[in-house]
Image (cartoon, rainbow, N blue to C red; front, top):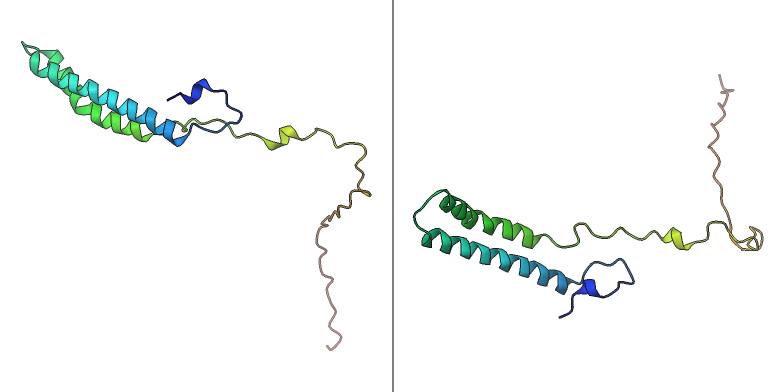
Length: 122
């Protein structure tokens, strides 16, 4: 299976879900392999000393770290979204005039305060 980082990307899309799951599974399995090695070395190496505690801590805490890292997808620090305005010309073309485009422009003006009405009945 080819890695998606070997192919040039035409867009800023993240890796495919299959590639992402494959990478996370590999990380998890490697960390669990290190945990098994820690357990075996903790039991086999004698005399017991400070390194036994370090290997035991690795055997205890590596599953938590492995699960957390396996659940974090690779798109956490994903690519920045593309700005669509970069593709637009900076200045409108001179041939496009407001009269000939057929675009109706509506401009709002501030609301006028209602004039006070005088009561003639009093």
